[in-house]
Structures are given as C-alpha cells and as structure tokens.
Length: 264
Ligand SMILES: [Zn+2]
Image (tube, rainbow, N blue to C red; front, side, top):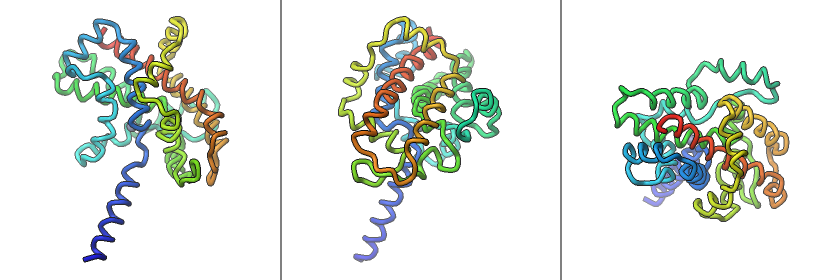
C-alpha cells in the first residue's frame, strides 16, 4: 500500500514537472501582456471584444491556451506556442528560415488567427477560441526563448540554478525572472505602461516578422550568457530585467494594435 502511494506520488510529480515544459510566460507574464493590451485598446475594439468574450478582462483569458494543453483533444495546438530557429543566423537568413518552417508554429498560427478573426463568416464560438489563443500567443512571441533552438527545446533542456534551486533556462524566462520582481500583474502593467505615444506608435508599426527577429536576437544573447549549469543570482536579474520588461511592454502594446486592427 505504502509503495503504491510512493509510486503514485513519483508519477504525479514527474507528470507535474513534464507538464510544465514550454509554457510561455508564466501566469503573471501573460497577464501583464494582456493587461497592457487592454489599456491600449480603442473604444470600438473594446466593445467588440466584450460582446464576443464577455465582461472578463483580457488578462482573465491570457493563460487559457496553456491550460487546455491538459486536454488531449488540443494536443495538435502545442506547437503553436513557439517556433524553433537555429542560433546566430544573419537577419536575412533568419527571415528566410522563419517563412519556410514546415510545421505549424507560432508565426504561422498568429497569422492564421488574425485572418480567421477578420472572417465575417466565422461562427462566434470559433472566434472566441481564436481570440483566446491570439491573446496568449502574442505574449509567447515576446518570450525570447519561444523563438529558440530545437536542440535544447527553447532552453527547456538547459539545466541551470536560480538562487540555488535547480530549474531550466526556459523556466527562468517564463517565470523566475518575472516573479522575482514581486509585482502583481496589474501593478506590473502599471509600472511598465509609461511609454510615450511616439514610442508606442513605433512599436505598434513594427512588422510581425521584425518582432520575431527581436525575440530571436535577445534569445541569442541569452544563450550566450547562460550555458548549461549556470548558477543564476542577483546579477542575472540585473543583467536582463530591462530586456524582459521591454519584451512584456512591447508585447502588450503590439497585442493591442493587432486587436484594434481586427475589431476597431
Ligand atoms: Zn504558450
């Protein structure tokens, strides 16, 4: 009886660990992106989204696309959360690779969702699903290791420690760095959301491919600074916190632009 309990515990623990692979920003990061987007929606888009999704804020739905990974009928959607590109390519090489990835991926899926949400013939319940995905995936796009390398599964296979606790590089960027700041998601959205109108306009007019390139460039920097067995402490936070904050903010204002273009 006791051994069965031990086996069950080990099984559940292993399942818990493996199910946490490759989630995108953790709960807080995705909510920060969605909350910043909410604050940049135009009136028309806000109204249309409310009619479609209900009164909950965008942040309420920001993690749904990760939650449904537990539903086996959505297994095919797992690869929508990232795109794998080999490291250290030139700009041109990167754009060529990005547009020629064979499998469904983060880049192809964001474009599919954009056009399906603009389709007047798509049923409302399908639009709701597409919108929940879009809110989440534009967040994933800003997490640099979602434009990472296949060999290490976007840093999931790079074992490091965070303040002495074993983890992996992907999780450092999904959660540890975000949680280290100790803001609630609404506080975090407020302290970041101070960009000038001009800056917001520049970010919002960045082509989608260029946004991927920004994440990719940052991913290359992260890979270079964080090899296997790195022991990460205060200095890692100091080195990367500004990059991470920029990614969260840019993702939020860009998500707003995407939604304003669809619904506004
Ligand atoms: Zn995700």
